[in-house]
Length: 251
Image (cartoon, rainbow, N blue to C red; front, side, top):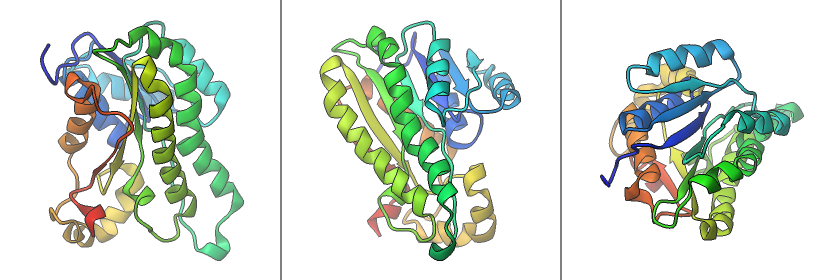
């Protein structure tokens, strides 16, 4: 077995139609994944992403709004085969001053960022168990954030939800490890995405200059970390939160 090969593996990436999710989906296919399910709320976006990824392999569009448990259960039901890799990437953010921060922002962000990875992982456990072996565990990769490690301002529900994702990752890793299912998290720093677009347009040069590597993350930076965690190379990594941030969290 090649150390970084995903040959024969099936994966599901939520929020896989753009940004970090699309970077990861492409990377999994380029590493040889047999099939990658691409999910997001909008069916049209799923179809477009699947068509874009077709040159790299088989991408299957499966639209779902994973902010509700019902939709997580429905999405899990669309996966009719053993699932080797689950990437919980779908997310939302919200920024507002403390005195004005709305209660609805807590619900929207926490439902998608923190509840969805729990509900979807639980719903897909039968499929993950089918794929898991002691030498080649099934993999759950949660997308956290450096905002869950550092202390940014005015994104109260976002930073709290991502810190929760990191802790959920460790708890699930301990519980599911004996079943040959690893659970790890990637904590991205600044990458080009719709969520970061306005910030990077306004402050991209300033943000890049603050990163020790002096640049914004590139698609291959994210894809490479996901492939590592999903492949034989990462088979003994469990419960880790890996910052992919050019060293931003060292500051």
